Image 1 (cartoon, one colour):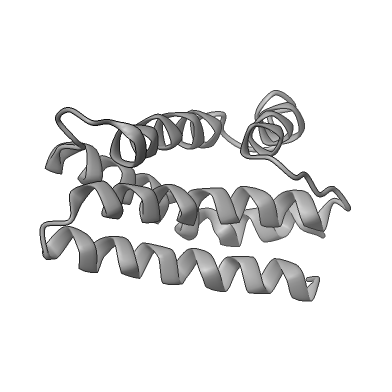
Image 2: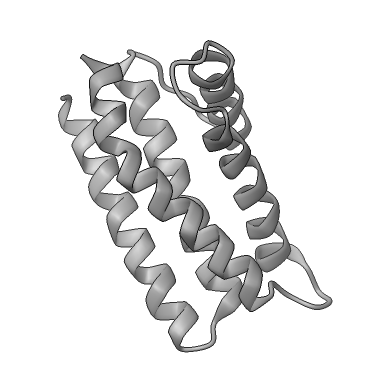
Length: 127
């Protein structure tokens, strides 16, 4: 595993912990952002292991879908989690009106947990 990959996986774990702490303290918009980043960092790590790096979120998300979900290397629900978590993050980061709900944060956090649990499966893809 490349050092950059491990660093991103470490950041993913930290982001998920931050999401949990922020959610517990009632900072739902910020918790949603951290949950999204936990998922995003894992997607980015997978791409880096394939020798690919991108400079935008949309490029990472698109490449993740193309290289992993559409090829059935693993369940396409992970691509959907990435897309949906980004949508929720956008509400929290940019919405002036009602922010992210507790249910949305809980769902995003669960998706991030699913991604992190699956990283063992991802390791076999990376070999």
